[in-house]
Image (cartoon, rainbow, N blue to C red; front, side):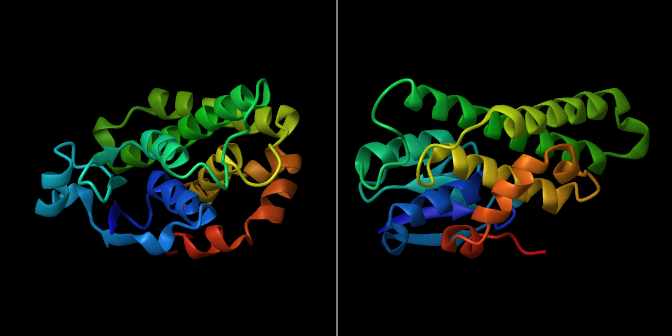
Amino acid sequence: MMKLFLSPTSPFARKVKVALMEKNLIREVEEIRVDPWSSPAELVQANPLCQVPTLVTDEGLALANSDSILAWLEHHTPQPALLPSGDPERGHAMAIAAQAQGLMQYTVDIVLERRRPTAQRSVTFTDRRMAAIMRVVTALGGEWMPIPGFGIDGIGVACALGYLDLRLPEYPWREVSPELARWYAGVVSRPSLKASAPPT
């Protein structure tokens, strides 16, 4: 059985869990919830970077980084597919997934910056990250057409928006992008998203 090291609040880990559920692989995975900041021995042994998510395959291969894990899953279990088979749709989905990954990372950056002692915080850094988040949300609402079904683009965007709600609830992204808010309201009830929702 595969092992998935994850933190319940990590948007990157959530992305992998959603993909596993969408590919009907979740029953083949043992979830191991960890706090990566405490450097648990089992996670460090599997992945010296001590990152979540980390997926350990049946063969003992430890895969880190959510995008690498999703790429492996897509190769290991091609169906149901999370990526279109042809261009330009495939490239477009990958580009949107990358934007969603950046949206998650920038939100994490703001969270970590706010946890620093007040005297050490950089308002300029936080403002730049927030401005970028606003640009991505605006662009997604105006230009993004999700691939049919629920693929890597939709998974990434949904997990990124859910993390915004969790960590930056004061940010009115729904007002910034009503189109994106309508899309999110339509997919947030998917079983994979409901089952992977972070604790509040």
